[in-house]
Amino acid sequence: MPRGVPRTKASEAVTPEPISTEPVTEKVDWTPGADDFLSLKGKAYLPARRRIQWMRGIPDPHPDWTIDTETEVFERGKFERPGRVTGGFAVVRANIYDETGRLIATGVKSEYSENFADFLEKAETGAIARGLAVAGYGTESALDLDEGAESERPADAPVAVTTSTVPGIEKGGKNSFATSLQVARIAALSNRLKLGTVGMTGVIEAVLGITVPPLSDEPTAGAKELKAFLADRSADELGKLIVALEKSEAAE
Image (cartoon, rainbow, N blue to C red; front, top):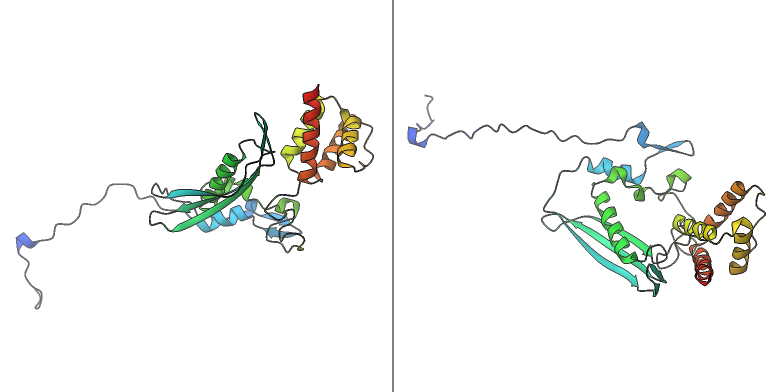
């Protein structure tokens, strides 16, 4: 034995730790491929949800993480009838914490009662989904994190400042653009009332005091043009149309 090395008694011998037979799972980090990029004005653009997924990689399970929600804005609205509440608005924030209490991610969602009678619950569910997506869970399918790049209006593009720093968002966080749900609701009411494009045009002009441009005489084409016209209106205007149509349906 070399000098300077102390002798080890048999009773003091160190027992080696048993070798684990569990399979070793190597963590594979996700990186974007060519199909993940969008073409924006001739340049490659990576949407927000793909950027988050790239940063997070494939997340590990975290059963000790917690989700905490808080209602930041809540306007109760007016109860009209079961399934119908007007004037309600909610903004909910969801915070994702790890086991040490460190904030991992946050998500915010707003919702109107005109879209859902249970708008507060919908806002909370949406906030949780967005928070988890930012934390890396379900990010690859989180379409609510798409920022409009498909229509060449990405969220991180330079924008002109109007009443808000975000296009289409009024003070208080309310969306000034019509929603697809509103357009679909108007179409359904119009069909049940058997208005057709001519009758619906008359309702729009009477309720909103605006002139609808000439529509195609062909029924299908005219209906598409009318839907496109409605989609360009504000959420408040479509809300007025829905109220008027619902009153007409109730009176029948």
